[in-house]
Length: 63
Image (cartoon, rainbow, N blue to C red):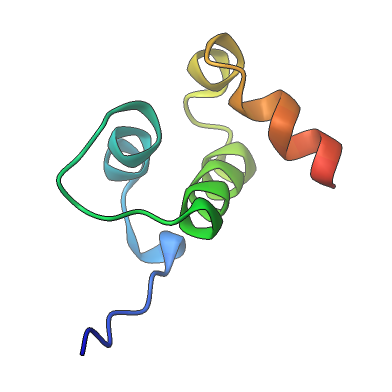
């Protein structure tokens, strides 16, 4: 049983961006993806890139 708890605050912005922008071997749930996007937006890192892939629009409509 995997007891890993995803906490986006513990990851650097570069790692969060990698999770958001690329397909990885790691299983990332929709909830974890949204949390990663929200954390990047809060940090104001990669904002332009998030806008380009349409991630911020999805994040803001849910807020």
